[in-house]
Amino acid sequence: MNFELKEITDRQIKDFARFPYTFFSKDPCWTDGFIKDIIHSLSPAHPFWLHGERALFMAFRDGSAVGRIAAIINRAHNSFHGDNCGFYGFFDCENNADTAKALFEKAEDWLRKRGFDNIIGPVNPSMNETCGTLLDAYDLPPMIMMPYNPPYYPKITEAAGYSKEKDLFAFRIDPRKGLPERYAKLLSRIIKNNDGLRIRKANIKNIDGEIAKIKAIYNEAWEKNWGFVPMTSLEFDELAKSLKQILKPELLYFAMYGDEPAGFVLILPNLNPAFKAADGKLNIFNLFSFLTAMRKIDSGRMLTLGIKKQYRNKGLELLLIKQAMDSATDLGWKWGEMSWTLEDNDLINKTILAVGGEKYKTYRLYGKKL
Image (cartoon, rainbow, N blue to C red; front, top):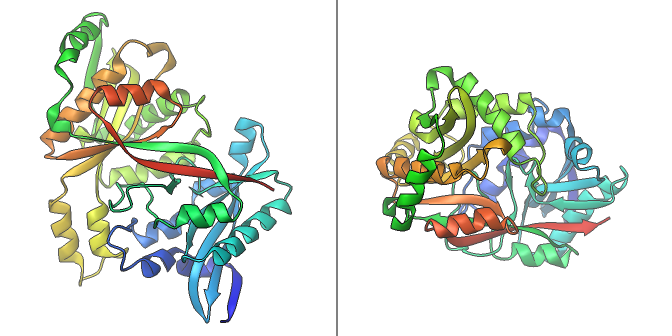
């Protein structure tokens, strides 16, 4: 069989972005957002690439695409963490260890020539976006903004010399059950002991101001987490654009002390069934199926929860989790996902388990010395 690897030019980004939609078209679980959004995330116009670089590679057999990978430089990561690490992402491949190895070697060689010591992935294109290789629960489709891959991915990745760098957890929860009864007195005590504290919905009419509050809390709340890199103002502007399309007041809540934001929680409806119905691109043929799926949404994800340093250990995270669960119940969600968390973040993992969460998926970030 004729096998070749090609570096993909900017003019061919559409082919690179479309590949998994075609290759996994018969997989009942695989899904992603709209192809145009994937193309934009790879485009030089996306603010991530102001501090990043990438090379795109695809594998072909007898003229048909059978795999892809991106080699990624994230200068913001290396500056923030003081290391010399390259990354890979947007990895998709047939069930063939040789094909996977060839793709990985292309990414590794590209990074090695630029002086990097090691490679970590998958990140698409950073840990602020989708990341990780799914290790279990292959019979369940992914939640919004979470990845999915077939069961053979860990095997072909490890066969190429990669080993565990860090695991990420996803928890499933039924918001309709509410918090366990034993938390009733604790919640009352938290409110009593925090004069001036209130939980409020987002003001959608001032979405730019609300996004600015998220930015201030987000970059402070996670700065000590493994792999975290602060988002730039332009990256937050990009986030604001996407949130404006779907954000409703009951999806975003702030913990406030007077006019001072102390923390926030953001939940999102699981749009993946609608994306699946659209097969990556809306048109007159699938619009009805897309809208029907949108009306049937019955789950969602707690995407992020953050507390400023000076307001930690006051129980605010418990109040925000309760508010998120109450809001999800009002929205008619039958279940929700709290994801992702670092495997060694014992405090948050124990908190999620204590409020009724059940760990049901694990994702792995792999690493390799160059």
